[in-house]
Amino acid sequence: MDSINLSNKTDWSFIEEVAEKSGQNPSLCYQCGNCTAGCPYSHFFDYPVSQIMRLLQAGQKDTILNSKAIWLCATCETCTTRCPCEIDVAHIMDTLRIIARRENRVSEKDIKTFYDAFLSSVKQFGRLYEVGTLLTYNLKSGNIMTDADLGPKVMSHNKIHFFPRSIKGKDQVAKIYERYQDKAKKHG
Image 1: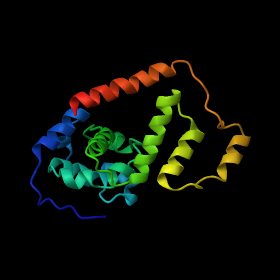
Image 2 (image 1 turned 120 degrees about the horizontal axis):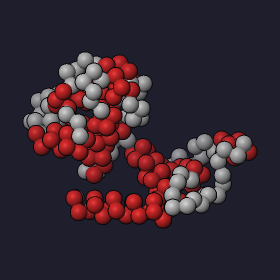
Image 3 (image 1 turned 90 degrees about the horizontal axis):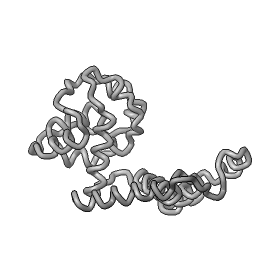
């Protein structure tokens, strides 16, 4: 894990943006460490959750948005559940990912590739089409044969289907995406 460098200038607007978009008050965190102690992925992070929160309090935008931690967070909400200050830490991590993505600061490209494949599937089919999502991800990530041996096993147990299933309301799901994209364009 990297050590925290708080020598950069505090970006007050970043702190305000995260607080506004997440609906959380990061200044309430008093660094008890419960979030980090409970996080099942903390050992994969470059900065544990409590350090991300401290970096946020210090307005260290570049360090946070370039970190791996915000992309590796599984949003399991253990940190949120354990927080004695009732901060929705997982939602703050989501917010940080959204800001990083908007600013094209993605330290974990394969995770972004998977998100894109997942969201594209839901937009197109109104629900997750597992085979299509996996194929899209594998092709775009360059991991073409990843999990190829699992396909026949899972399909033989009728757990996933080779062709996408149609659902009622898939047009409405597509409209949700269109509204979001329109809103994102207006707000930059």
